[in-house]
Length: 238
Image 1 (cartoon, rainbow, N blue to C red):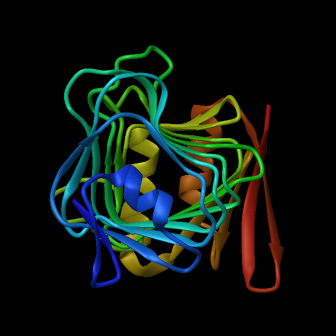
Image 2 (tube, rainbow, N blue to C red; image 1 turned 180 degrees about the vertical axis):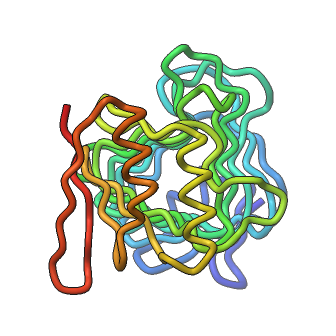
């Protein structure tokens, strides 16, 4: 089901991840059904090879990241159907990069479910054609308690928004509608990346005043804008 390099092939994902070393890549060779598991190794890449990993079972997280500097690319993370996990991907490592991956949390049933959870002191970069789906737009797609960098600058084939659902920020919330509004502005060439850190929205380049005003009013917050060099950002407080 997986290989490391061109010659080492493995019949289970577990065997492949026990064998993978630093700066190596585990590549899927077919679609896989898996129980919950943890990536503990540092400096490793998971190349889904265009395939899906279907997680089954119950518990806190389907896929937990504790290794540092982990990349997941080129495929889909999803479940076998309705499952009891609270989150599909739980990042506890220092850096997780998701490139060209669909994080499909549409079958999560827990009341506090989030498709992707990024924990304190952790960084997640969401790049390329990746997108994250909550069970519905009223649910949480991303629960961020660390630093979350989302490249919203290009439309995603097959999706009307890169983040479908809410982004929960340490108790505050960006709604699905606000996220779509921001994506539209970014795709017009105004911005490249949105950086979400705690209760602060930090955007490289020119601030999108209309978006900030709407966000502040919707969440009952006051808004203050800052500039430093070529960067500008807004801080919200209640």
